[in-house]
Image 1 (spheres, one colour):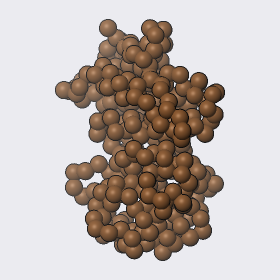
Image 2 (cartoon, one colour):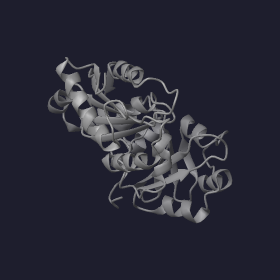
Image 3 (cartoon, rainbow, N blue to C red):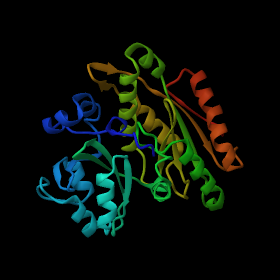
Length: 302
């Protein structure tokens, strides 16, 4: 990950004035509804401020100010002190994966430099194929704006599916394209459009199942990868839920923004015979959804 990837390339969430002063009001407002956890950490690794979500995700409990994040990660997650201290003193953005010892999803920490003596630490749950593969990446597979996996990680997951697909699994690729996003970009500008994408990503993350993986393909295109295990809910039901979710208004700065989504679905062994064809076939289905008037979904299969 580039050394100049600073706080401006990460996302934050808090309503607290302390962090508003530290990171700027627009970023704080843009992710008010986020389920991410955020903390401000000093140069010694002590927590200066942390949101309730941060405490919950890292199982901290109690008052956070003055607590040593380094000691907690070593005790709770068995992350060695050298690794944590190096991440908290680096001027480059860093990603750490934490594995619970109980049957809970892994937690990923995104650490970015705020100034010489302070770091912002963002915590999020990850799941599905994304969780398993993140530990093998160096950050090149992460979209710097939304902190989702990018096209590179998508290719990695699809390659993995080639070797793991079996008779009881029918992997599904759901491709989403935001309706009217180009209008937002042109009329309100790139900064507002970027903040909207962050909110969209966070809203989608809270809607998918643990076994699913959410990625940003490009611009305003997102992908949900579902391993397609036997007994899983129908992808059409998920598409309907995602469309409903994205049809709700977004609040970005002083603007109420109404968009929507068009979705294309491809499913292995249902008109799609190889993993390599999942994305091209989903694109064809997405084209049909747009032609049908947008704000709907189409499948490549009957």
